[in-house]
Length: 185
Length: 296
Image (cartoon, rainbow over all chains, first blue to last red; front, side, top):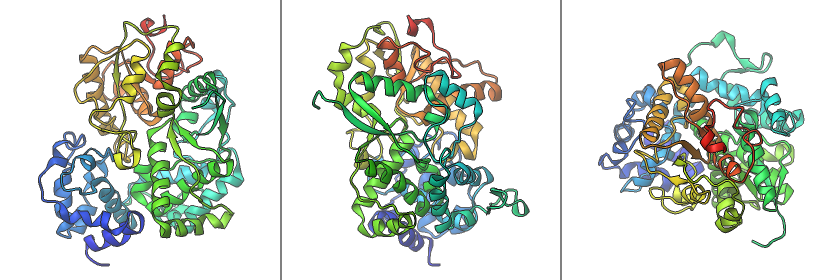
């Protein structure tokens, strides 16, 4: 484990390219991100502060800040940053690193459970099947929830990337592991 | 585009087919009207939600998105979507995989476990852009049988329709025009309102992390539209639809408010203007109800 900046560049670089991630160090604290942030007016999220903390290697403080999860990824700051800091992508990568170290709330882990069970973060149930019929559609769409062999491909991806382990998924109960239940943060 | 039928693969995602089938039905009906055939993507999954799964593990998000792209590639068709989340996820994945050969190789190693391969032969389109750019405003205008002449509309874009510009390619994210054009083609008035381009509050796992807090953004958005004299809100995103429509019931319960501000996906609004019934558009099976003004 290097500094937070090094980890961001290494890990995020694999997806976005290293140069994209290195823009973190271009932040000069002008605050344009925070000024236009729809979350910042309602929550403790201060994007400018977050990037300063990241530059200063304040890993634990960032990973333990609840507001890290109050960014809606709206990309407003990403478009407006006068220095070209790839803000939203940096926030997502910081979140990835936090999640790897176990900072992931139960509701967030549950979205993974739904996908592992059905292939959908928002699965269909009987009442919604009736709604589909009311507008003249097949009761069940032809997706992973309908075709087990297709769902198994998505499950295979989650196994391969160890997403199942990251959320403490129990394949026997197809749910979060009870023994370690509760807020994992 | 030529006159002959064009086929697209419809990537359904989660919210459209599993919560708001009216969006699916209205979009398919309108596309068919204009000679555009919709093919089902058998075995498609969650896109998966870019701000959610992308926030937890990009290396899981990417192959799941790539697998969905593969389905369309195998069909030999371009994709259309009805949700900005799906648009964001699939278009970004497609873009990243086409730009980064090593990432593509790594992703294909995962997909190869079940015999699939991302080749980079499809394209991800938003249904709203197909309406605007492929069908076109002139043809749409010819089919408006119930003009919305006295209706004031608040356009809501959602975030991932326009941003990031370098991926979406729809021009300015501060002064957009696509949704405005589609609203105006019905004869309705597009009304500017405070913070028009503000997020609905749902994205990035924010709704999942703290629903009441996310609904406060939604409340502000709706109040701004109502105060500007708007009769309804028209948007291009199934996930925003969930937050803006069902969110009103959640707010009324949590905050004691009495919201019933009509929320319509763009094809539902166009559908009404083209003479479809509110039942055909699925507008009578959602939380907010449609006023007579929109139905006459």
